[in-house]
Length: 107
Image 1 (cartoon, rainbow, N blue to C red):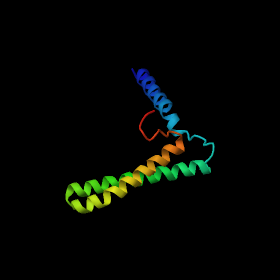
Image 2: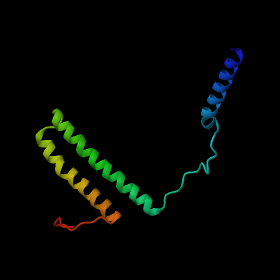
Image 3: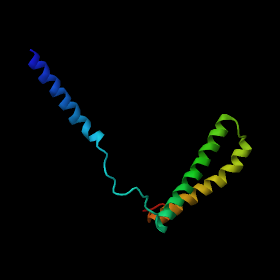
């Protein structure tokens, strides 16, 4: 009986060590340095940030209009310019990635 308990305890310890070993061992990183962006990657990142800002501004305006913070007049006055900003950001991003479609909507 005592031998069986000792074997079970030893087996439990071995199993715990085997499972925990990958988490205990620290991996060797290839490099801790971040890669510097080239000009094309930097331009794409700027376009993505512009798109995100334009769409966030539209979303915020829509939210404020729905909650009554922005009047109908102010909403209509701001909506056009924000839509133009969002459209130009999306078009620039599409041009950059080569996904430009004809203006009439045909592929």
